[in-house]
Length: 214
Image (tube, rainbow, N blue to C red; front, side, top):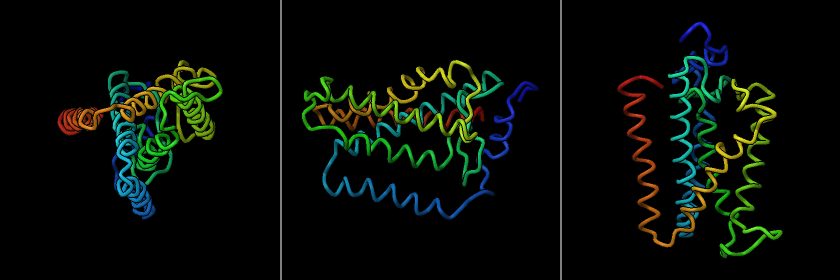
């Protein structure tokens, strides 16, 4: 890293993919995620399952982009998670955040009314939940930022300029996840989700495994 690299970045890099900080609470957290998905599979709620997986797959892609931002800027990722963690996967993604996103997509999909055309307070229900869920998630991130658990180094992605975080940080997740949920063809849903994970896997192999950029 360069001399102008942020302190939060240096802290995160010192933790990056180190097994020395492993904690056993990771195992029950993983079990909770499995239970949540297996429960929906048992109920054959395939729309919810695939929406949750789409949400999580997009999260991985954006985390890869975020890590690449650090590589090319030599200053900071857009968001950094330098705090205590059982395992830091990339500079902005720890195992706890990863499990949270795995559950978040599933949870938000379960809020969707079966009738995609129904309105809530005069708004199409999908767009209502896109906005409400995104604002809620960003409010949580603002608190984490104030506590120093989530660090934002750029003025355009920082309090009080949270509009971009709402649009890119979360609305994009909701739009993509809900779109997958509402696709009529199950084959198309599976193909879209599979494509996202294939891209994620290819990026991880190239940028993490081969080039060591992230």
